[in-house]
Image 1 (cartoon, rainbow, N blue to C red):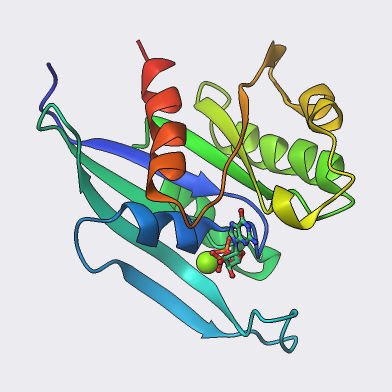
Image 2 (cartoon, rainbow, N blue to C red; image 1 turned 180 degrees about the vertical axis):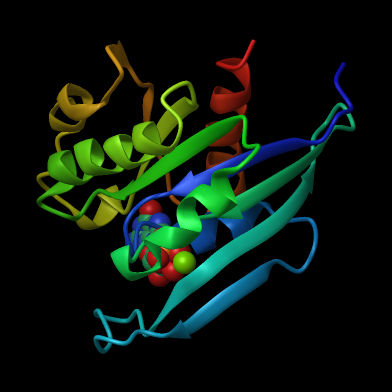
Length: 175
Ligand SMILES: Nc1nc2c(ncn2[C@@H]2O[C@H](COP(=O)(O)OP(=O)(O)O)[C@@H](O)[C@H]2O)c(=O)[nH]1
Ligand SMILES: [Mg+2]
């Protein structure tokens, strides 16, 4: 049993579901820094995370877990190393309905590796219900961190149980 505070980070592009996962999991009212999208709305999405998202979760064994979301926009990339400092692992979220998901996967893994190449990483793919032609094998081919394949899961970010599965997978990979 572990009672030291755990810190995990959610990374990924705008619209991947980072804020949604944090809201689904949080035991407290999550802290968000949502601002109107400067480039105009993307579909139904009119706001984006500018600095960070924060949520607190108590794990079943009593361990407090802190979850931070990284801003997706490159414009706020200077915040990423600050938010990632002290984290034990990163969940990379990717939108399954983005046709460039394999490139996004490689791009976000290289961002995380550039900040900390020793980081534990899992990948969660959201919005696959919106993508009839989604192929998980294309993402798996791009899901290499260092030289090691990263676990890939499909989840609905709005579902607390499925979002929790990503956290459990990441925590299991730590020990
Ligand atoms: N249909 C569908 N929508 C999803 C799923 N996961 C997330 N979303 C939606 O996708 C959008 C993601 O936005 P958000 O959480 O703000 O993404 P962020 O930019 O990464 O923080 C929200 O409208 C979610 O409700 C999913 O599995 N299926
Ligand atoms: Mg967000």
